[in-house]
Amino acid sequence: MRIAIIAPGSRGDVEPYTALGKGLQAAGHGVRLVSHEDFEELARSHGVEFWPMAGRIQGIAQSREMRNRIGKGSFIAVLSQMAKEAKSRAVAMAEGGLAACRGMDAVLAGVGGLFVAQALAEKLDLPVLQAYYIPFTPTGAYPSFIIPRPPAWLGASLNRLSYHLARQMMWQGLRPAISQVRKQVLGLPPAPLWGPRIHDGGRRYPILYGFSPAVIPPAPDWGAATHVTGYWFLDPAEDWTPPPALVEFLGAGPPPVYVGFGSMSDRDPEATAALVVQALARAGQRAILLAGWGGLRPTDLPASVYMLDSAPFSWLFPRVSAVVHHGGAGTTAAGLRAGVPSVVIPFFADQFFWAQRVSDLGVGPQPIRRRQLTVDRLARALHTATADAAMRQRAATLGATIQAEDGVARAVAIIGGL
Image (tube, rainbow, N blue to C red; front, side, top):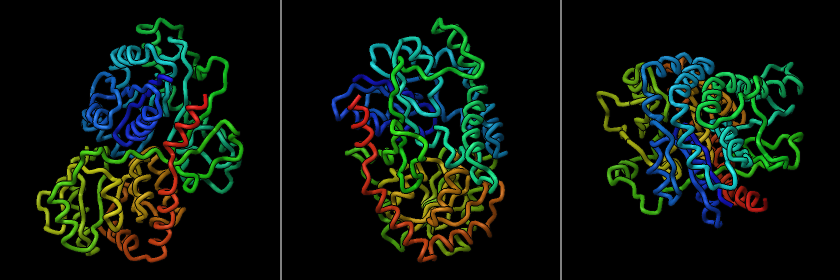
């Protein structure tokens, strides 16, 4: 089967689909990863064919407007800015996506790429394979990511409704861009007000979820066509080697704490970096600090903190004592797999969902919202994550369970059976 994977977003969004594409390719399928230009090197380093969409996502994430909206912690505010950016780039992105999907047998996408994938599939009469890394199928068992801590009175009906609400929030924000694409590039009729149906040619295709059932159990009302496969991890390329200075730092003392907020931009990254360094000193912890897209670069770095530009989490996280991060799906998964506690500082959207899940599983302290982050709160959370023996044991046990799973292999087997 020849499959085009539509995977826009940050690195944490793209890596799982790169891993899935690599697995599909190894099983004999033809794969094209369609994403932002930022990730061409990532795909090619793993031998996955890459087709670029117009533009680079990092510049959008680091813009002043996006920094301000992320700083507000509002999913709607960020979604509004993303919709604005999508409309300005819609035609070029659709043209690139259409070229990538020609000659394919199916289009695969998750939350970020679902609506554009649906339009491209409709144009080319291809089925859409749904593959997510966060619950997106309505269920009465638990609410959507837009309600990370549900009220006690929220019942099954309202749980299901929350998924429809989340989908509508995303669809209505992106509808102007998709409408423009359908008219100007694809020559399709306008999409329905409440969103298009998944193009499947009248056949029911499986829905895949790339997370561990030990982290999020399969909902009992999802049915046999929905599969929780385990995470889709992307391990380092074969030729990757760690920087000698990083190896030296790791060996110069007890395991450090990792701190990084990935693609999350910050209105004042210097102040945030200074806060982190103060909290580390108060907690008596060595640390590896990842600059990330937010630009966490302290002006006065102590010898107990190592500044890192990048490193594969699958290599790094098993070598640290705890992971402090923003709660992105990919970083959360990597921390859980490593078997070390996580201190989650969510900024917006599904990060609150993952942050609460970490806490509920007992593998990290209560999350600290970014707007509520202080030196004292972070220092206390660091102490708990590094000193609570029961928490550390729960994290190690969960990590061993996740390590025993092979989500990519299971997902590939399901797709191979189509």
